[in-house]
Amino acid sequence: MSNKEYYKELASEDCKPMSIHHINWWLLKYEDYFYKAISESECGKWSKWIKDNSIHVFPCACAIREQDCIFIELYHQLLEVSELNKREEFYSEQLIRFSSHKLKKESVIEWVRDNRSYYQEIRYKLEFDSVGIVIDVRVSNHDDTYKVMLVKIDKHDFMHAIEFKRIFEEMEYLDFI
Image (cartoon, rainbow, N blue to C red):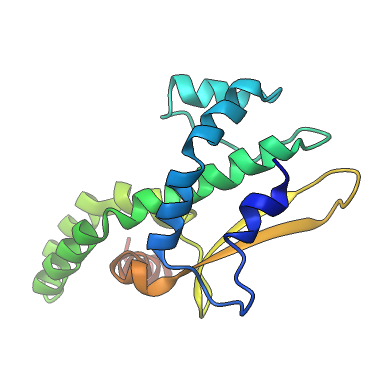
């Protein structure tokens, strides 16, 4: 499969971010191909991830990137963002809990302690700009060493997670935590 086939369904001509519903549709459409590409890929890290998906997957460091490996990495990153979106209700509940505790320092410290691991999960996975969530897959090969594939997802689909992350970052900046 060429990268143009799967990527054109993610690249918006008018540069508008995709909805999470569109991303989930794309993930479902290419799920079978994702697992097939992993089984055929020469990059062994993906088969290790299939065996134990708790393993942290680093970006590919292969000297020459296979098209399938690029696809797998993009799919994996979009899958992670989709999983984060499924926790929007949880983040909403935590924001409500935070707002009820924010006047008492001890309660805020307890809230931070209870939610630190959730913040660590989204800290680097949820990168965004003024328009949306940014998924960037660096494509390094001999043809185009600095090529970057960008997918933007509407940030309104992650309102609670973004606010949750902002609160933690503000507390770190203020040296509260």
